[in-house]
Amino acid sequence: ILNVEQSPQSLHVQEGDSTNFTCSFPSSNFYALHWYRWETAKSPEALFVMTLNGDEKKKGRISATLNTKEGYSYLYIKGSQPEDSATYLCAFLRSGNTPLVFGKGTRLSVIA
Amino acid sequence: EAQVTQNPRYLITVTGKKLTVTCSQNMNHEYMSWYRQDPGLGLRQIYYSMNVEATDKGDVPEGYKVSRKEKRNFPLILESPSPNQTSLYFCASSLTPWGQGTDTQYFGPGTRLTVL
Figure 1 (spheres, one colour):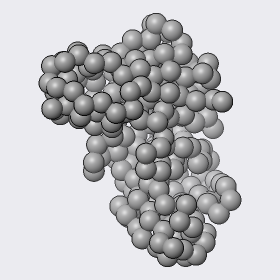
Figure 2 (figure 1 turned 180 degrees about the horizontal axis):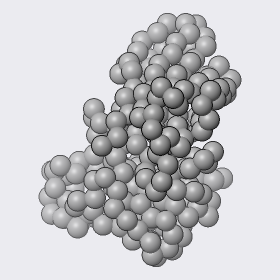
Figure 3 (figure 1 turned 135 degrees about the vertical axis):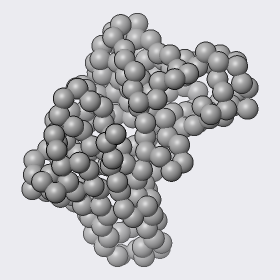
Figure 4 (figure 1 turned 30 degrees about the vertical axis):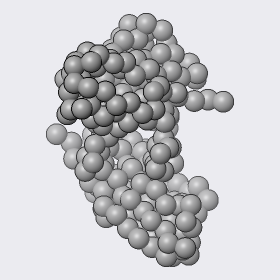
């Protein structure tokens, strides 16, 4: 059974603070790592798809890095805003015909 | 607008009463999946479909059926729902299997099902 771990489980930060959280996944047979942002009562929305070791992706104040050799990805949010409050999901895709395996998510609350 | 739609969004039913949750996408995607989300667990795949008339079991298929008669639609059928199927259900679609490579999945808005 593939294990995708996300930490912390939840996080409360003040508006303006920068924050980061982790997704750990098996380092063997890596194919891709997805990050999704899931706001309450909405659909999960894709943030990044990362495929190469050392990848760094950025979208506005949110960025992500990938280390496939050690099996982790970091998601960073710079200058958190209340609208960043959401659950951030990562999902690991192994090479071969296997489905995405999701982590349990990190629930971020940004307090104004 | 590119989207995945699900209906109903909320449903309360009783044990044993057959129900269908519809899912439709307008992006001409070949791959569609159903997931369930339960507290403390990640999204778990129930069934997936690689194309019309091609479906296969995911991680937690027991108690569910699906069909894919047309490319755009992928309904989830609970023939005899039980309380342990109370969950939040998401349908998703992608151009490639589960968003391989740089592709990604597009999720529907979710269906919150309660089985009494």
